[in-house]
Length: 229
Image 1 (cartoon, rainbow, N blue to C red):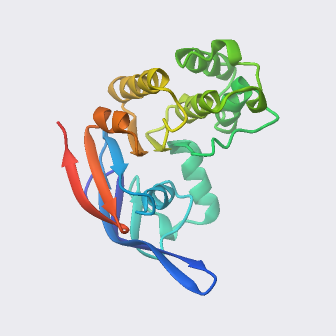
Image 2: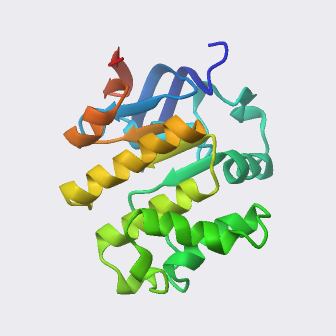
């Protein structure tokens, strides 16, 4: 679709479990537009995480076409896909994926350093952690934090580089309602003030309530796509 940040067309994704083929996505179509605050919902096994991984150039489709910022991912080398992820995308993973030997601030700084951000990266990392009420934990390593705290550090890392698109897999799964609300408010503010686009995979009704658009998956395909604005 013209002008879409992400354009997924007739995409299939198959996985092999031994000799058994699992059809995770089946001819799926979806376009993500600039400024979307989009929740992808559906039962476990419906393809939500698989779709996020394809949109984020972390995996490649079995069939169909995935374009991100106008680039057809299937034509990009592994190095070019990694470059795209680093420069233009932010990720929040269910498993956090924090570097265990680095502190909270260093985890956030690490991505900024890879992007070539200079002396300001420490202040930027500290500022975003303070926004998420993690100011007292900047020097703690992941093993010294709760699951919810690690989740918020992972979010800080994803948005600190001010990417055009943030993909978040169950971003509130380990948060209480107060911290989940704070997180969503901050993300919506980033959308409104800095033009970031957000796509969530979620089971959380609170995330859905904040969404501007809700896409429902079932058995690897889109069964509804509703705008709330």
